[in-house]
Image: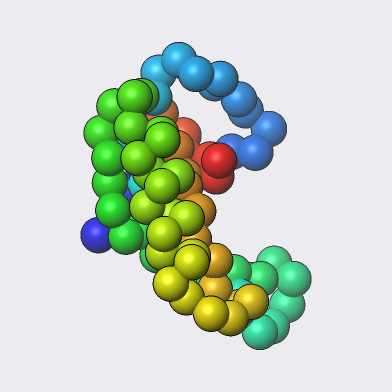
Amino acid sequence: MRIDGSYDMCHCHGLTGIAVYVVVRIRAVPGPASAAEARDDLAVLEGAGQYPQARGRAASLQAGHAGPSVQFGVDVVYDDGCRMPW
């Protein structure tokens, strides 16, 4: 599953215009610093009120997985397509 959206670390929407939260698996990838991680979308939770559920899913996945090279987190995707890790 992929939710399209460009990462824009300089642009911040705040809490308005949130379309979905995406639970992601973040894997460390050996190589140059510009390719330091790979992100896989695992679950999509629609609506601004789904942040606690998304964080809970990421935390439970992290608790069930041993190893520092894989982490689980949450990305937020805004109505305009901007996507940022939270």
